Image (cartoon, rainbow, N blue to C red; front, side, top):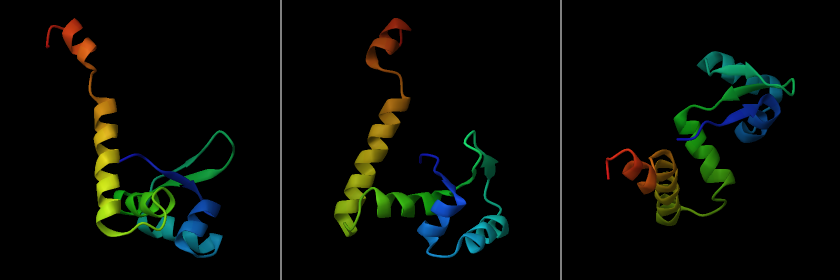
Length: 95
């Protein structure tokens, strides 16, 4: 699962609540926070919320099996990008 870091304003939009309430959710649930180079503090979404975020903003209104298939395909692509390419395995003698 990719890491998704949202500013408090972005998080408030995602959660559908005011910014102070979004900051309260982050504090209460002890999500990781960091101040970024642009001066904004961002919170890292845990896996369940990151999944919901991707489903809402990446896949849009699609529902059910079609979304599940797209998620599985995306995960396959991400895992393949992390593993060594065939030429790299051959160069290491693992091919």
